[in-house]
Length: 140
Image (tube, rainbow, N blue to C red; front, side, top):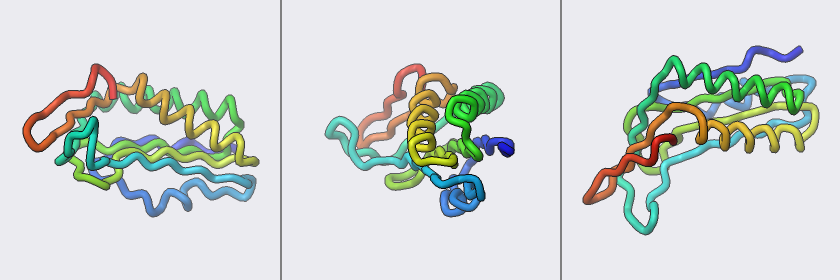
């Protein structure tokens, strides 16, 4: 039986325990995507990123994404967790995970969940470069 998805917005994103959160005796596949702060964007050196959110709406949208993925790919467990605040280079900012009976389903589900999160969830990103700061579009 499918367990409730883990949907969270956190100040500090810990990724070490995600495998255990997704492990399930019915799952032959577990996929985890971790999005991190990269050092360069458009040939400009990134100092850090800052994430802000409308938390209530973001959690609601993240849950909707999880529910859609669970229904479409018959997932056993799902984790969607996003960090807010200032994050430095190489620091994780988002983790998406799924476990399912077969690998194809969890790969497809993770891709769908991260892509949809970036399109629909009200989490905003500010890029802080050496000599300027830029808010990235109206969505993440």
